[in-house]
Image 1 (cartoon, helix red, strand yellow):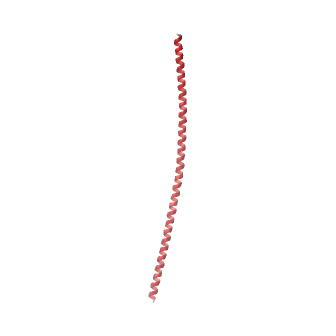
Image 2 (tube, rainbow, N blue to C red):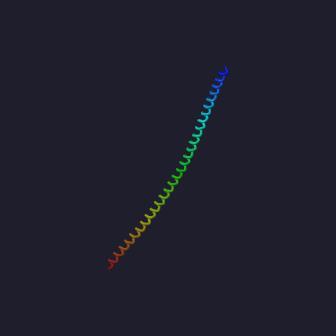
Image 3 (cartoon, rainbow, N blue to C red):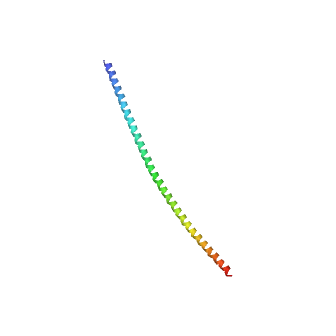
Length: 108
């Protein structure tokens, strides 16, 4: 009878140990999953912050390139107008000189 009670007690203890192990193992899995989820969430947050910063820098660079391009076009347009004015001045002077030369030849 004592032997039977010992075996029953041993089985109950083993059953309790198994339940305790299963419970502990399940808590460990849940905690590990929670840690992985938190880490994934943290990395997603860092990635999102990096993307926002990268997009802001890209927009700044595009704005700077647009400004430089516009300044270049304005400078080119101004240079073109100055060149055309100088050319017109040279042409006018040449025409005046030609007319003067014609008149000089006719007078002689």
